[in-house]
Length: 147
Image (cartoon, rainbow, N blue to C red; front, side, top):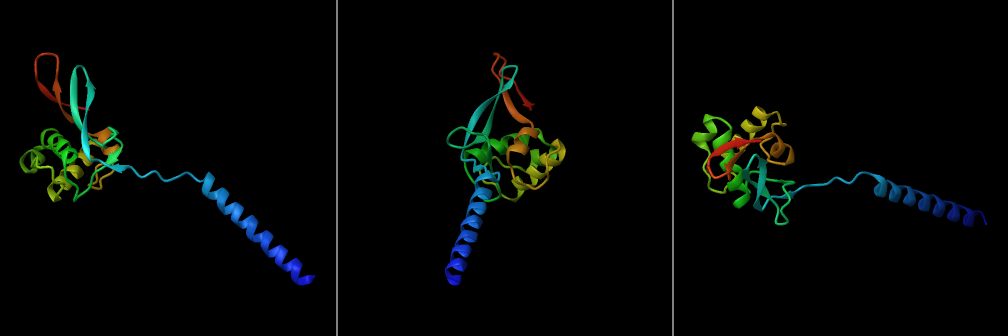
């Protein structure tokens, strides 16, 4: 009988522990990792200005880019980095769709200039802070850095 009580007691402790762990997992805030940007979306920047911004295939701009990434999303980012950050980025960023060391450096410059955490990785905070090379569709066809 003593062994049975111990087993029942141990089973109860395990069940309660499992329940607490399960509750902890269910109630703990889930870490939401943003998807990698794979394409671009044209975003209204206000006053008839529209900019191409990196996005996912489902048109979410809540995505990230880092060194080694390639494609349309990187090209959209590079265009704005080249035109809207500083003379170094204008002279050194190639709009080639390859997130290499110079693109990472340009992102760091943009992050520092626009008040975002400086890590060289493009994500939602950098997107919200930076300025975007935007075309005005009011008939003038002019471009400007908008944010």
